[in-house]
Every structure is written in C-alpha cells, then in structure tokens.
Image 1 (cartoon, helix red, strand yellow):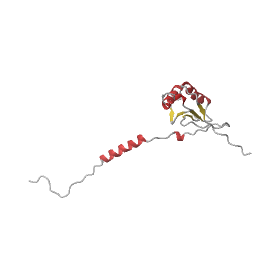
Image 2 (cartoon, one colour; image 1 turned 60 degrees about the horizontal axis):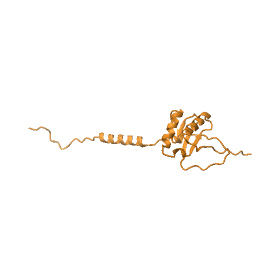
Image 3 (cartoon, helix red, strand yellow; image 1 turned 135 degrees about the vertical axis):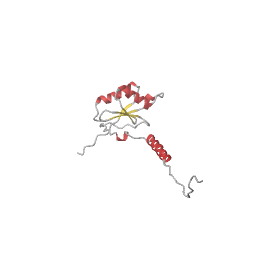
Image 4 (spheres, helix red, strand yellow; image 1 turned 90 degrees about the horizontal axis):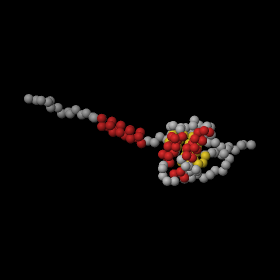
Length: 145
C-alpha cells in the first residue's frame, strides 16, 4: 500500500517573514537613532550694532528667539513660552552642576521679535543666577557713499 506518491521533486517554499522582520527592526533602529536637526532651519536675523566684537567663550549656552517669539535652548525648541517652562528648559540643557550659572550665555534674538520675548528670556536667565549674558548682533552694512 502506497501512502504518498514518490516524486523526485520537493516543493520548495521561500519564507520571507524573517526577512521582513529584520527589515522592520532595521527601519525602526534608523528612525529612532537619527537626529533631526531643526535648528538649521531656524533663521534669526540678528540686530545691528556698531560695537566691537567680543571673543566667544568655548561652549556658551545659546538661547535663541525667532521672529514669532519661539524660544530655543541649545538645539531644542521650548514648546510652552511661559517663564517657568523656559527656566526648566535652560536648567535641563545647562545641567545642575556646580558653577553652571557661571557659564556664558549667548542670547540670539531676531531683530524683529517683540521686546517682551527678549525680556522674558533675560528674566529667566537672571532668576536662574546667570550673570554673564551676551546678546548676539551683526555689524551694520557699510554705506556705499
């Protein structure tokens, strides 16, 4: 009695499910580890000043304010523009190490932003104990007379 036909060919089946699993894991790895640099899209038109340039410190803490009044601490945007949220963002980026308030701070505010946003940033820095605050400016364009 024959139960199965004896054939010389075996049915080969290509199982691609493990390949799909590996590809999904790789895709998730690359998406989660990629840094998206949003600060490069931040365009700040600095105000003009005729003062002499000052040499920058090695690693200043940068607080940027764009034209619409959005705050950026380091490379991160502060989503809520309140004073307390701004202070928390500055503290988290600068760290709580001893002497952190001695660090130089560079305030890069757009020339067309409201003055209140600059005052809010300076108020937050002052309440955290930062006293070495500089405001970034550019030299005025020379007149071609």
